[in-house]
Length: 164
Image 1 (tube, rainbow, N blue to C red):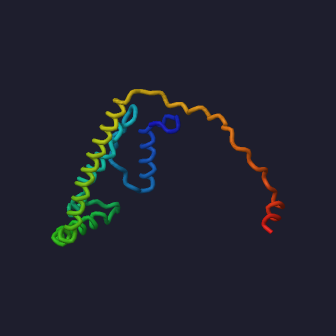
Image 2 (cartoon, helix red, strand yellow):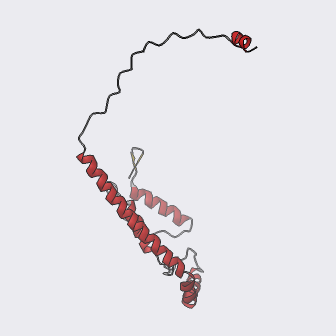
Image 3 (cartoon, one colour):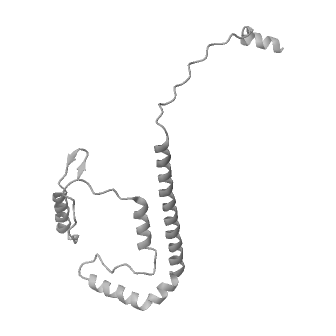
C-alpha cells in the first residue's frame, strides 16, 4: 500500500489496529487478505453496483444475525431470531411493494449500464476511425480596415450644453 509516496506495511498496520481494538475491549475482525504486492484490481463501478443491487433487491430476505454486545449478546441474538420467526409473514407483507420496486430499480440500472457500455464502445470506435489531425491553427488577425472618419468625441460639458 502506498500513501503519498511512502511505503506502509499493511500487515503491520492491521496488526496494530487489531491490538488497539483488543485493548479497548472491542472484538477484532476475521483475518483479512491483504495483497502482498501491488494494488488491488480496479473495480468496474457499473458491474459492482449492479451486483450490490442484485444482492439486496429482496427486502424480505433477512441479513445474518449478529450483535456487537458482549455478555448479553447471545440473549439479544435469541430475541432477534424469535422475532424473525414469529413475524416473518408480517415482514414479507409489509415489504412486498419495496421488493417489487427494488427489482425495477435493479432492472433499470442493468439496462442503463448496458447502454453506457455500448455507447462507450461506439465512442471508442469513432475515435479510432477518426484520422489523427493536428489541432487547427487560429487564423491570423485581420488587418485593420479603413473606416470613415469619425467625429471627435464630445466632452461631458459639451454634451450637457447641447441638451439644454
